[in-house]
Length: 345
Image (cartoon, rainbow, N blue to C red; front, side, top):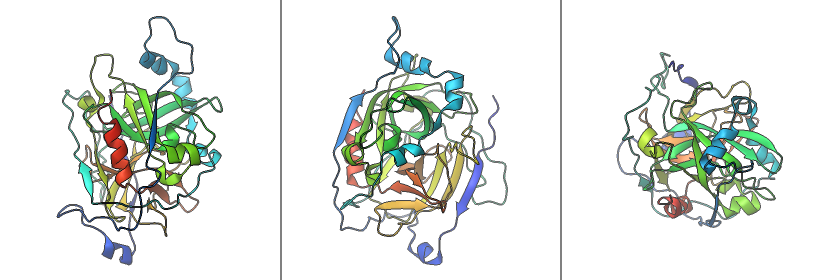
C-alpha cells in the first residue's frame, strides 16, 4: 500500500517575546502553568454510543455503526466546525489552569504493524522528518439533530483499557440544545479511502457538561471508548497510544496532526503543523497560527512527538478568519475526566 508524504502546513515562528517565554520541552522538568484559575465546569457525562439505523439480526452495535459508513457516505461527510457555530459556542468564565503539571505516558503497539508510516520527503524545513502517526485518524459520525454526516480528527490515547480516543467535544455532542452523535467510528491512518488499521466503533461517548449544556469552548474536549476489533484486539495495542499532559505552560512546542477537509484541503491524508503555542489574550486556551480548516476539529496537539506518538496537550477546537487555531487549555479537570474513563471497557 502506498502512503503519500505527510504534508507540511506550517512551521510557525513565535514572536521574539513569545520565544523568550517558551518552555524547552525536550529537557528538564515541566513548567507548571500559572495559577489563579479554577477547574469549574469539570463534571462530565457519558452515554452508550448508538446507531441511527434499525438493529439487524446478528449484527453487533459495533458492526452496525461501521456498516453505516459506505464509501459514498464517507466521501460526502462534511466538516464538523459548523457544529460549533450552530451550538452558539461561548467562552467560559472562571476556568483556568490548576495544580502541578502531570502526564500519562504514551504506549507503543504490541501487535505487529500492518503498514509502515510515511515520512515527508521535503527538505530544508524544521519539520522535514515528521512522520504520519498510526495513533491519529479520521472520525466519521451522524448528527441526529440535522440528519447529516460529519467528519472530525482524533487520536488514540494510552489508558488501562487500551480503548480510548480523544477528540473535541463538538465531535461527540452538539452542545447546548444539541444531541449525542451516532454511528461514530475512528479510522486510524485513513489514507484517501484506504483503512489499513480498520474501523473502530464507539462504545461510549464522554463530554464535559459545560460543553453539553452551555457550549463552553474551554471544555470542548471529549473521550471516546471504542469496541475491540473483530479479532478481539484493543486499539492502543494495535496502533499505539499517545500520552496526556495537563497543567503545562501555555507556551509549548507542539506538533498537530489532523485531517482538514474544507478547502484548500481535501481530508484525504494527515497534515501537520509545528510551532510554539501561545495564550490568546486572556482566554484559557492555547493557540497556533496553522490555518487548519474544518475536518481538523478534534485533532490532537502533541508535545514531544517522536514520529509515532507524543503527549496530548490540546485538541483542535476552532479556527478564526486570521488562520488562528485554538484548543482548550488542558487543566486538572481534563486529567480527572481521563481518570474517570481510563478503565472503562
